[in-house]
Image 1 (cartoon, helix red, strand yellow):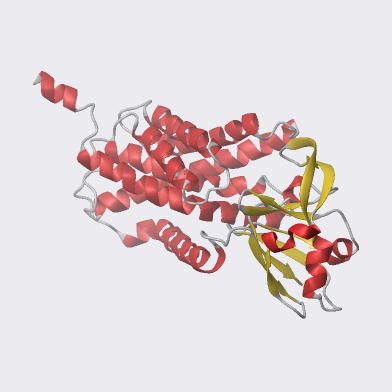
Image 2 (tube, one colour; image 1 turned 60 degrees about the vertical axis):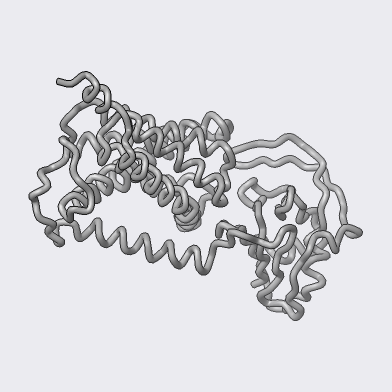
Length: 348
């Protein structure tokens, strides 16, 4: 064997780099949408967080595909890290921590698929399960210091199962669809390229992909606001005078409260927060007599609701300015109600 050729085998060529870039871009952009789906699952189960881990495996599809289609160690880690960079700069809510989370996910993908040269469905699902569970452990180290061990175990278990099903199995089947349809040339560890694409064998995967893409289109067109007006939010719903709240116009109404953030996933010691009382903001909108709830919606679709009666009675709940973004400060409420990046306040 030519030594130069042997050395080249261990390098990523242009095709590999382009493939990793494409998968990272798609995965990074869709991560915000997956986070939105996770919030919907949490609301379905009536918990502030945790249940969304049931679909966390969707984050693992991209590094799994890259590692499987390229067939070289490091493809998963590089794809995961690049995916994290894309997510960070396209409105991800986790900040720079997402770089560490995504890189660790990709590393576990590389390690899992690297245990054997001839992959199979079980190995792929196990790699996806371990990678998905790893993201919970990273978040545990950064955020979840106050979570009960039993609840943390449930989160890890949900992520493990999701990583195997939505990550491992989905990536495995998508890989075969791409190879069988001649869109991607196979690596040595993939089934022979002469195998034809048989639609009914991949019906579940195709249904998931179509549903996922349709939901993504709806999310980005109807829910997600990637470029919100700095320091502003719309006040609408069951009110007589809907308007756009602009923080700079309410500076004279500011007040300061000292409170702590005591949430299910994190704790912030008592600190001073300066903002505009919600009672004043809502009073200008003049809620209708039959309104009972105020819903706070973030730019990424996350939302939380509080009773109108408590907000209108002069409580200490404030709308503060955090950089150029509005944030709800809700003394006495769980941290899940401290909505960040508020863009809409709906009275219902």
